[in-house]
Length: 260
Length: 350
Ligand SMILES: Nc1ncnc2c1ncn2[C@@H]1O[C@H](COP(=O)(O)OP(=O)(O)OP(=O)(O)O)[C@@H](O)[C@H]1O
Ligand SMILES: [Mg+2]
Image (cartoon, rainbow over all chains, first blue to last red):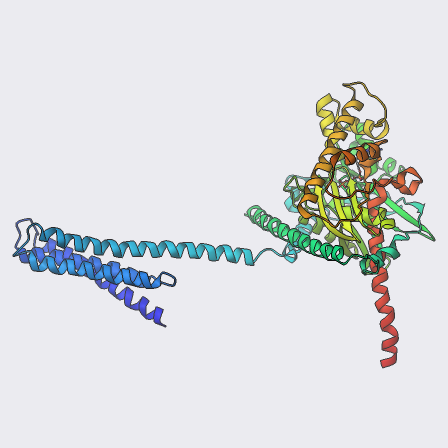
């Protein structure tokens, strides 16, 4: 709620700053402003232009949400900057006719310049901060919505379906690879005679021992060894999962680029 | 009945329980050859029991015969997989792989029959996507009607070869496109990884070093090569021995690196080696020697003499499919037990 108000207020300030500046320029054109113009005309023009500029910058600053951890400093800088620039304009208006000589000129212009610098610097800093934040959020999101194994499976299904049914895609450059039963005739042997098999004597005793090994029925009289193994295999699984994730991301990118 | 399926770069092998105390293996080469229909009379293909598919003027010869035909007609063979996986760019050969898998796997006896499929672990030296491959193979088997499970190729070797050691040890499968390694403790994998080098790598290196065509190098490697004999420097066999040794050293170096990362438990780890490339005569001797020189950070009790030394069934090429079958049967048993326990309960409540 508060940030909404701030945004609303900020945009209003921004717009009024803009109008002030434009008005000042319009006024300058209207009165044919010159070095020798009437001081009141000069004051009006530059006063409005100066105030307009600081309003514009102040508005931009307000519109930018300033969040922690720098929010407080940022607001401080913003207000100081605004005050400095307004003071600068005010003292310009007051001293221009009477006392527009060194050193007043330098004090006044210094106040105004530093105010503008603070405002624009603050806006720039916030913009950069926001950019970085958005980027890191993006990265985070990317990391979170990794392609899962199911996505890969889907991708594979799609590819397989295409490679078998959608003949037109391949036929353009590789006529023989359509696996459309009507055009892709299987030879007689492929259809009729069975696959050759060789039979070999083998009692496959491993099946039982594997069962007991997996169920942990095999005795190892060393608890520590058992534990390290379990930990190792857990970390290994994690590693390969990470690797797979990386791979699938790359795959995703590749597939996307292929589609295009 | 549960089945085990080994989908390799060179061979696709299915293992299932035979009648009585036996295992039956169905094997096909993972390859096909594209030919003009005009080159061949179709009835000739049929009578010779050649596996093929036809589309207009193109004939695709599948499996083992593709190799024979490629020699006769001097045409390059196409292999759907490279370095252990179906590459996402090779989508057009997926229908061929599918046919070969369906062929060796056969139809399930009942819907939802369990099959364990060997897949490579993530490679340490290449950025290929193992997951895509695994899911594709899995989806293909699912479409035939199986309930699929994936298992690391190295772990399949452990299951098949290290039963006498409580499934504790190091399983290594030196295949065509890859070498897969799993260090397991009580059937639990501690480290599983793969290396994108295998028999194909040796062939390529030797071929480019000697200028002999790749296919010929493969043929010589498989039929006329042994580690124990002395070959002239500059001969193909000499080059084979050199690159084989380089491969073994590379495998062991990577194993050492991985072991240093994880610090496995302080027990004895026997090593079992399987896969077609370990078929070469004298391979295990060299391997054992390199292992003992490597000074691994674990206690390697011994390199297990492979089953190939005794009988036919002990061919290291079948080891992986056998390990998958063991996993599948174990799973089937485990699922059968609770079901059997549940039934009487239900009868009581009803
Ligand atoms: N007698 C032999 N001597 C040496 N190498 C052999 C022999 N027989 C087969 N090979 C090699 O073994 C490899 C095939 O082995 P295997 O079937 O285990 O691999 P795969 O499981 O298909 O591949 P991967 O597991 O890497 O995906 C090929 O490189 C082949 O050249
Ligand atoms: Mg293999």
